[in-house]
Image 1 (cartoon, rainbow, N blue to C red):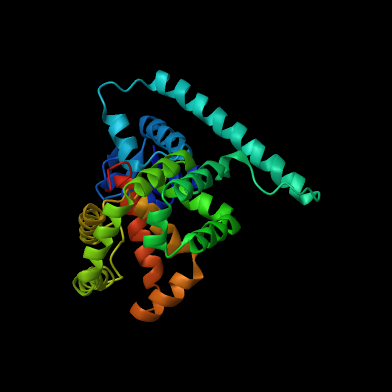
Image 2 (tube, rainbow, N blue to C red):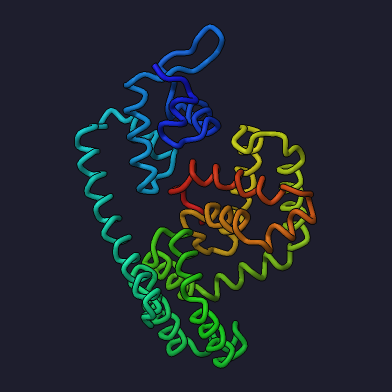
Length: 298
């Protein structure tokens, strides 16, 4: 039997995260001592190993729990599948490493297929050719639309990363954008409805945010905090129905990354809500995303 600290040292998973795994019934300790200390045996460690394999494949915690709890779960079959997927991931990472090495040696290759946005830009160009009247009506003219495209191209890598994070792949992102453009008049009507009610929606969003950070001594994974994020998610879904736009399968994961990595977010939200607020919000959104990714947000 190992203590939770020993398991943490062995695996690199923090004690706090192991507590969270226990709380969401993903990984229960083998036993708990009279003093309340968690102990983990070989069976628990095997389950934890499976969890780590799934996490390496970016499978959300909610889905991992469903897989492990399923009556159809076959550990040997799952290991073979994990190996197959990890080999594919290894090959992709090797390609990226090779390209980085080329750059370090002075190579001029600027992008690679995993982040290739060419099909996305083709969709925009096709839309421009086939829907000139819509572009003039909603974007203010062809030149303004061209400027938008050029701005996106100048930030292609950043846009690709966000597309993959929010939609799972550039292919899915491109398909969503294509559908959005095909329904542009309906979407713009939805935006107009949102605009007419912007004061109400802004006040609603502000109230939820203020509730979220009202007590930052709470654990972001607590039911109280996650319940507020769920309310934010429900509000987003309602707004998405009005606008009729596909927001992607991992909108909150993308937003969590913005809060946790973008200095501008820290400046704005720490200034508005107090030091540490941005990180607290980001952690709350990240945890919510890990347990809800795959749900439809539209």
